[in-house]
Image (tube, rainbow, N blue to C red):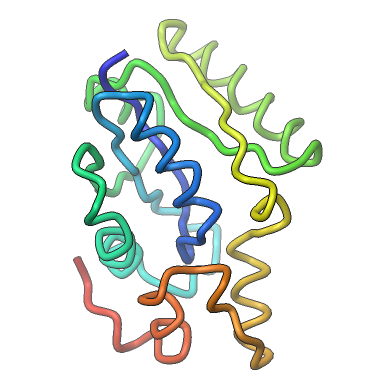
Length: 162
């Protein structure tokens, strides 16, 4: 497999996301990180800001490309020539939702595989939602997110659009 897609909201990108991405970058020739437009979700950062923060956080990974997409994930994966989707599994609680999504994606695009990667143990409890909440309440999130995200959480409007 030469090319895989790592989709998500990444609002914001966490060290857990980056851990999974680093693992994928060692296994595949190219990893496309695809930031999803989710109209139903109330995002802290715009899609352009999330792409910008991801680019800042992944510049050291030569075989990683950051982009965004709208619409059906399987259609975007096909457009990009991706052979598989990468999804992170933190805990058993993630499995049911991810399993259902993988089966739906397979029914829509039978030749597109979903591969699950587990982050390091230190990130198994970490989520973007929890990072935003801790930050909003004045907690220190420096060990959970890249430095650029720490600054962005303090002043979201200062983050440029990609």
